[in-house]
Length: 152
Image (tube, rainbow, N blue to C red; front, side, top):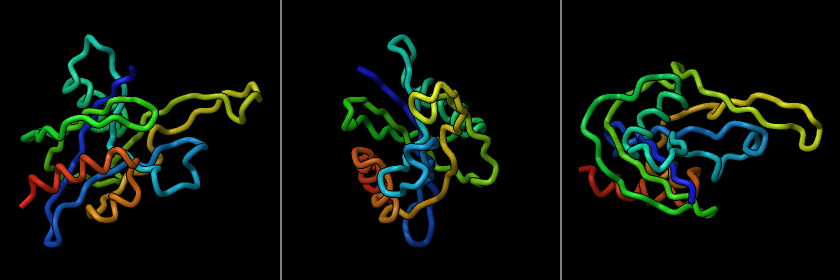
């Protein structure tokens, strides 16, 4: 069973918290909005602590060091494909223009024999919780609900 861990940045606003989500890169998600946004996260091996993986993956996916601050454990969810995702929320502000996303390689177009490189996340943006619920991977809406429970 695959496991991923990630960090969900949030910042308070006068209208409630906003969260930083990443739009999944690559050809499958290029023209999609709903269900194509995610908490910055990545897979890890069983011998790596989930917290360490969440911080490492934040750096790999965004090209920036993970922020310091109090981490709020948002628990786990099981996504449609069976992957277990563990997330922590940290209050921090980040300018989306400062990211340098990591990349991955895949054969594209399929069966072409051509390997192409794509960004892990092709963009990041801040979303109010209601808008975030409309675009995030469905199973990850639970993290937004859990964060809302912790917010004043």
